[in-house]
Length: 191
Image 1 (cartoon, rainbow, N blue to C red):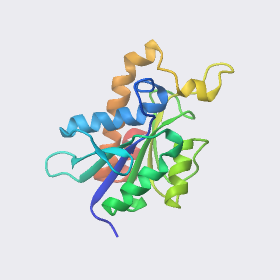
Image 2: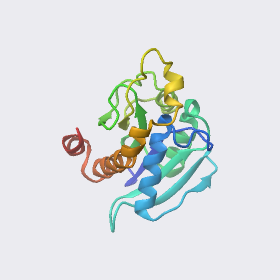
Image 3: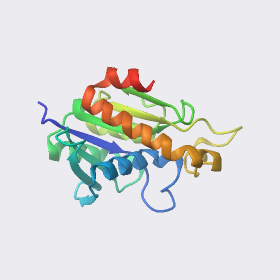
Image 4: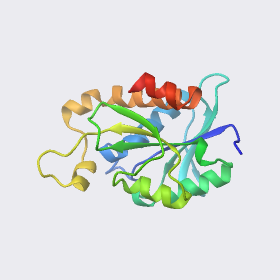
């Protein structure tokens, strides 16, 4: 049963030390969407901050969410919010960093594996399904033999920071297209 509302979750870690890191690009996209909608985030008892509104005038109703806990325990707040708002996995969009695609590239999909992403693993375990939409925001692979965990928790490089606002803006556009027009049209527009 669908409520006509989409839950859009931007993944990341809490606190100012993680704010501008690669792992928090999902939260950056959620912030951009909130700015476009003219709404602010408020604390929710599910362990997240949420903002509700519509995508455009008369557009679809959405709940934007950012967990206030760490990435590897994202599932609990996502599951609690889905339950609270009566939203099934078919109306869930998770926006996250993706190592397996280059920086400044987007990919959208429904279901599939988690690719070692602990936030996605937690969400899948809590929901009991992999069948939710993902907007995969490319951050690229670590250089040389750098540890993946170190890489995702570092800020973007200066050249990446110069392009980052456009990357985040384009990812927010992809989320809007996914919610308003569906997965295939969004894939055609952004792949």
